[in-house]
Length: 224
Ligand SMILES: C[S@@+](CC[C@H](N)C(=O)[O-])C[C@H]1O[C@@H](n2cnc3c(N)ncnc32)[C@H](O)[C@@H]1O
Image (cartoon, rainbow, N blue to C red; front, side):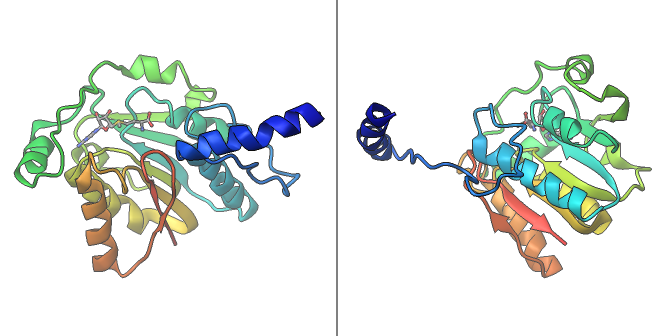
């Protein structure tokens, strides 16, 4: 044990030089289960889990949604945390749409060149612990949302590009239950500048605020 302690300081110093800081997260909270602890983006998934705990503690009604699912790696965690709620999955499952990409290029938000077409509905559904809770909305958003009238307690908007992110905020925020959360990925990601633009524009127009968190994509969290 003491030899481990003597290793800690030099190791922590070495990591700090690489801008990696060692800390024990939530070490004074014995009830925190850390179900999602083993993953690459600790801050993103741990914040999801803490928000899920708040939603449960407050008995917030409403369903779940993700706009921008790709291979379902975030959606599967949302599905796992809420065994009793429907999870809407919005994606083309064929990558970005040209209409959105042309805005990106015209406004210098991003190259819009990242390819997210190597996925499928089946691949995503096979990862889901509660597969029967999933409602797949395949197609271009916001067209794919026509007819969805549900209220939501948790929404992840991870569509990377300005147009779908803004459309997602306009669609989901009025449907967000009080004490619910919207996570907008890439708010502090210089490779997708349209994400921040969409959040700022929406928050100013709606007179609401957001909380930026230091996960790898730089998520902004909106609540009600
Ligand atoms: C970064 S990926 C999502 C990653 C996923 N949330 C995760 O954490 O693993 C972005 C996804 O947004 C989807 N997308 C972007 N614009 C869209 C639109 N207008 N309609 C539907 N899907 C869209 C893309 O097809 C792509 O799969």
